[in-house]
Figure 1 (spheres, rainbow, N blue to C red):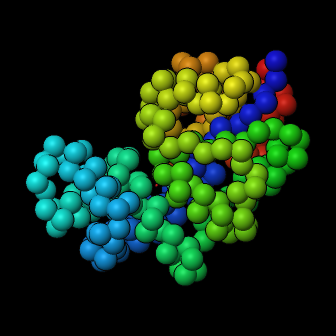
Figure 2: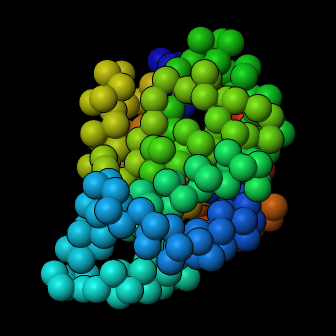
Figure 3: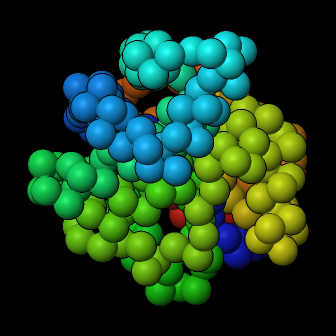
Length: 230
Ligand SMILES: CSCCC(=O)C(=O)COP(=O)(O)O
Ligand SMILES: [Mg+2]
């Protein structure tokens, strides 16, 4: 049995931690107040602010309180769905204005192109919203990479450290779990995917420490021979 689909994480796998932590998160933090105040009547933003209230269990949280909570979650790198959704909306402006482009490692670009040419189906699973994922790959350093992907998943399918999320993705892909290879830099995500029956590979970029070495691991996509995985 060989790999038919690759499901990839973004931060730490296709994309540097630094781009997310030093470019995207500070941008969202700095723009949060102005963005939420400006768009508070927009139904999508109003619903997300209500979701922040739900998440905090404080139904009467003020707009200022919600903004402060969102900024606190950014500082704590919380993967909370309404935060991730608002960040995506905010980053759109940054990408469109050319304030930044989506970082994708050069080896990742080359191999995504190659795997796509080989007929492998490519999917993304990130805590960043699907909207934010499409922006990052659509406005990447290497141009628009979105035609390479067959689909995107975010925390709407479940959290990345839970096996159920991968079971839902397997069902959506309509492939046997063992024919799907999941790439990530985080041990708990790889453990959850393996529990759901997916093949796994840890991507250990820039010598960051990892506790996922019980999984197959590579330093970059050049070291990953997908065809040899059975
Ligand atoms: C795709 S948007 C930027 C990344 C982001 O917000 C994030 O939380 C990254 O999480 P990942 O699951 O890709 O490690
Ligand atoms: Mg990651």
